[in-house]
Image (cartoon, rainbow, N blue to C red):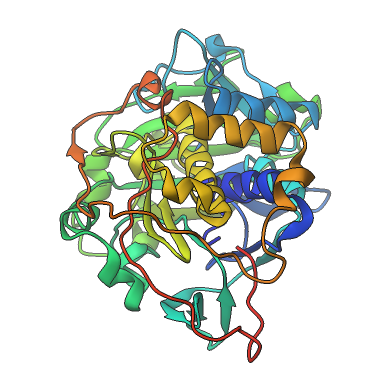
Length: 454
């Protein structure tokens, strides 16, 4: 599993539910921690550790959608997330609202704790600062090589990183023979501009400026939609955390999410100068701190993140599944919110379909029944994950996973490129239309180098 963001963490969770203890799950993450675009940053004050969500400010989930509702309910029961009253939130178009959509915040002040919980439940071996350089076929398995030089064999791979991007880790930066298996039309869409671009800024302020923050935000809300020439959304992180956890921090924490126009503007300087501009706007214009007070007296710490791949604006819609099986023998699947939408439900949908794709490829019999209805494959998943999982997993070959083949499947993917966010109902029938993009015969018994799981 490549990527410890929302999709990768959910995929690891579902793979463990499907395969039980019969496989080892490894998650390689190029950054120093879990989260991806749900990352949280920390600041060490004299008396406590302060946290701020510099990516997504809330976890948004369609609770009528089983794929995400089940995960959310488990995380809430673990005491990691808490339901937020929508009256305390802005009506930003970046966040779905109404109907069965609900929004959750981290009890401890960081949303990435939810993803850490999923990886713990998956019993995954997570390796940080492990950036993937290439993936190639070797002796019937995938040889995954990192930029640091490590190379390991895996029986299946789920690639859960961004589809494209500028200066970030994404699908096309992973070289190797696997790329030749991607349908050219799919590859064209994957290289398109799928995301918008935004800066996120977290400011940890001195305690005496709490009143300025309270006056700006008012008596109760967690965030305000600004939408001027620089800032789209202002979030009162410390109030959000205090309201949910009941623990008041010693420092007010503000997070600003910039507009796309400001983020895309070429100002002729780097992000540190941009941080200075944003900080001055927040301190002196929004919070109305007197101009004779130096910023260094107000701001104890700060963090700026350049989100070059922020919100999905052009999802790649596939007719039957929210993922792309590139190969079935051995399995390699692309997954991410670029098949769905930029929220927890979108990520969870793609992650579950990717896990089901790997599971059905490994079991083998479904490869001979590529026309099986989606409901049958969902039934396979529910039987494994909710019922006698050991009975299902014990049918797997003890040493290697060998998928049976029957017939030929067209390799051309039918992808509709549409603008806007895909409605949640679009994913309800998502299970698998597994396309055979490549085919190999296994050579040797793999005794020279032990192959790992996912």
